[in-house]
Length: 69
Image 1: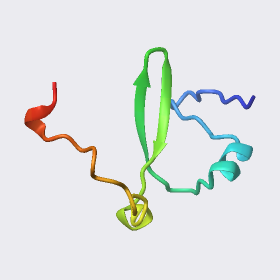
Image 2 (image 1 turned 45 degrees about the vertical axis):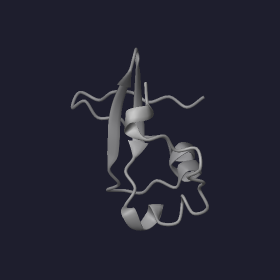
Image 3 (image 1 turned 120 degrees about the horizontal axis):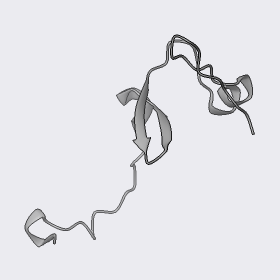
């Protein structure tokens, strides 16, 4: 398990092994979420990176707004 330390300027460095595993790069932006006692960092993706991710997704089971409970 990798660990990180919060600096006096409230900065955290992501360990190299995780940066390489997740293909992170300098200057990349993240969405920061609080989940109970945890902090979750989610990389922001551009629309170009997301293009084609939902290809082939079925729409047969989609409910209309008025049908939702």
